[in-house]
Image 1 (cartoon, rainbow, N blue to C red):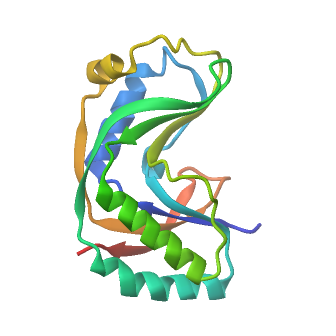
Image 2: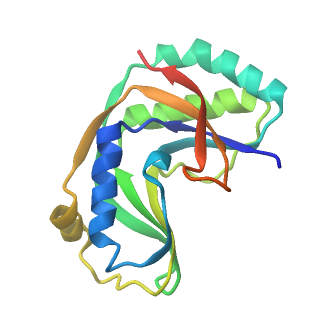
Length: 185
């Protein structure tokens, strides 16, 4: 089976633990078919799909050269939302406050990926942390999302200081295996 790869911002263990606690609190009210494993939480920068050894080697070379040129930066997880229709919400996610440094890093990573021979999605970048997939029922979207977030989670701030290349293993939990890491300066 061909493995897929993606590049993501690493979330610190304490951030993953807080998000997992938040999910635990709301699971009974919002039944999703699949809740993301604690170790699989991340902020995607680029989805690569399947990759050849040559592409991964070139990607490693370019990321090793370019990533240390970026300063680490703070991110703030401050809201959540849903992708999909009201009748059929597909993804429940936590969002990060807009941060110029994150968008700049994502653009640089996308450029590097294309230089390494990958074809990336063309839709606009929407940074988020997927928490759950495939809601079992429709969602009452009249809920005040900001109030709900404050009630259950409150803001979560952390330092983005590392990006990772993950390989997918859909038959296992956790599903994502770290294959390489790169530190920001």
